[in-house]
Image 1 (cartoon, rainbow, N blue to C red):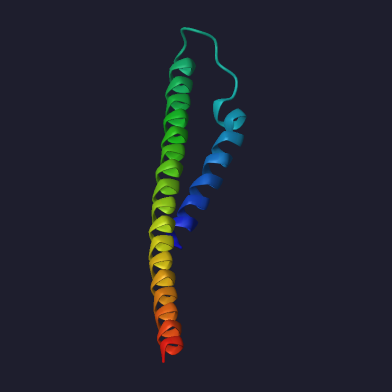
Image 2: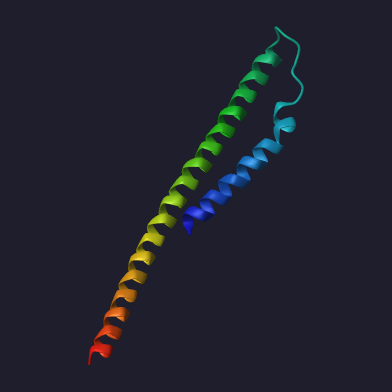
Length: 96
């Protein structure tokens, strides 16, 4: 459950980061100014954080899929065990 919540939270955060593009980036200042350097640092930080969030989404989704697959494998094994026991019990009843 935690993995699903984490994946969803990171996905929403990533979407908000993408929608915040105009607010964070703003207009590019004229070249060869101090404002351009600060804008470049702000923009690079924004891009790195956005990439990190989306990498987090990918890994979180991967771990979620792995966990669900493991749970389904356990459930499948349990269902097969129950089926075999029921079949064996039915066979014993028919033989008697």
